[in-house]
Image (cartoon, rainbow, N blue to C red; front, top):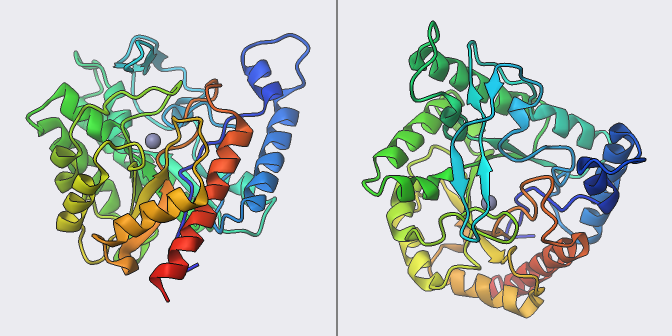
Length: 350
Ligand SMILES: [Zn+2]
């Protein structure tokens, strides 16, 4: 394909895995369920025609908490994220140092690459999201500066391992970017987050940075968002200061896409590619390929086609227990993205 197209990452887990996560008695062992879920996901992904695939994050607890799995120096009362429909997700709080990941993303990549020769993309969580687990009143004997130093090393390691193990792309999930403007409309926190993540990206060569990307969205959990009311116009100019080659942006669900495309056009830098969301992951209606084609053609009016790609607005199930989207719906939508992108290509490159 001439227009690159990539998924974000997560796919709803199979019913029997969801049941086991919910603690249903007589479930099969997790290793059996995980193995089957990854295998089935890869099979379904290939059927969509997707040139780049993921493991659907079948074995991640969530896009943000996987590095914290197994850690014993955590308490439960951390930062709470409020979603529009009233539900919340709460991060844990670190209780003592030093901070080390309990689990690295390369584990998922390795398990997937064992089963497929297709290009595999791997998502990792941002340093800025994990920076929120350090308590506001500090930890005695482990300063915030010590913590940030450890965090940057761990985040770098998480990315580097994935590159070394052959990830097609490594995508940093930066969903707290837009949210930060809700918590701090001055933009100070956003600038701080961007700076923190650039401290990680700057440890990679320019060539490596071209294999790195960032995903942003207004959150997507139980078909609800946390920061869709924050204007993209305030967020995007800062976003393109991140030192990576690819940007995966929610766009299909934006009320005024043209306004957003004009901002992207203004701030996108020459060595950057923007993958625009052409699939609304929160809407159960499956897009037609013509709808997708038209969204790509619309974007191509503003963005140079050499710097344009397509993606889904978000993962289809960033938290493992989210059952708001059906698995079949997710794959049907991905198929529509692939076919619609091809239709647009035929018009753009002829
Ligand atoms: Zn997202």
